[in-house]
Image (cartoon, rainbow, N blue to C red; front, side):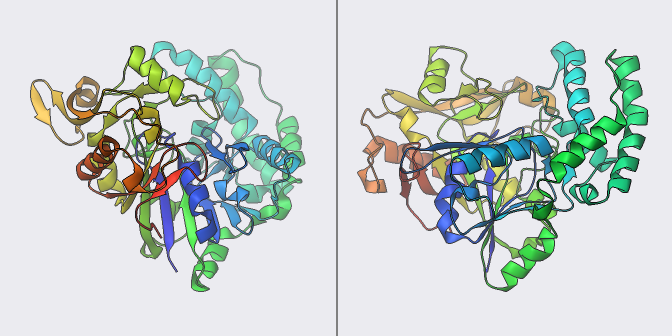
Length: 428
């Protein structure tokens, strides 16, 4: 059976949690394959319960699914335990959550360095969440990282922490004028947390491939979005991992030939959190309207999201670099009540029209959107359950996005709830 990848096709916050939840009863395993607790998913159940998930896959809310935190994820032990406790308190069964032995740990010194570095950069800051994600990935690539499996061997853990703090404490004290961290205290703190989830540590690469051999379906869930990919995003204003579909294989241990479907999540407009270029950004009353009606505030960071019109240049780019087969268009209902709805169909850079993503960082920053005006609609669409029930102008808007993006729009979100979705074509 296939592996399916679910990715954000913009800058993240597109509504991947809802899409994962919608597909939940059709899959057996859901895997988070990259990122850390610097992102989140919001899922609203039919009974109105709202869950904000930061590190744990969205499938945790669907009974019977095995959820996996893959090897490509960086895990903050304290955050993991807090999230598990919150779910347990609300009656959610978390017994089917597994953690890859090869996932890396976010250590206290990663958080400390992340915060002081961003503060030190001042106006040149990247806009990180200060949760230690970047420094943890830096240590992973430098081959000095601490992995989840190290929690099972105190001797190795202690050696790695002491070696790391030999250098990092000098950085904290001599460069940033901060207090040094005590290696013993760090080890004790991490071991105490690790003891509480040691039973979840597993060789998830083996288990996932065995599941596929048995004919079970695996859904690979990325966090953030395509334009935040460290290789394919608006560098340097990106995350430290690969949210694109190519990262799904590396972050899970599932070979690329197993993947048959790549579902991209698009918001019916565009949002971004943090610093960096945003060609269609609206710094006016309309931008505030999209923010307010769409509830555009970060699930994890609580930062207000920047808002703008739909950008088809980004969508085409996402289709290409991810190999997207289907799109799930979310939050169409937010656009109800507008006379016209602009779509960015191209950019103008130094007087020249560009239909595809500019090659250089400079050109992305200088890109001016070229808009096409679509007629709006005033009807409340939250009760629509078939595409034909949508107002004609709303249907035309979706069809134009489909045409410009280069992949079919297979589902449309018309409200925040699990059941407030129109399915046009099967995605699995």
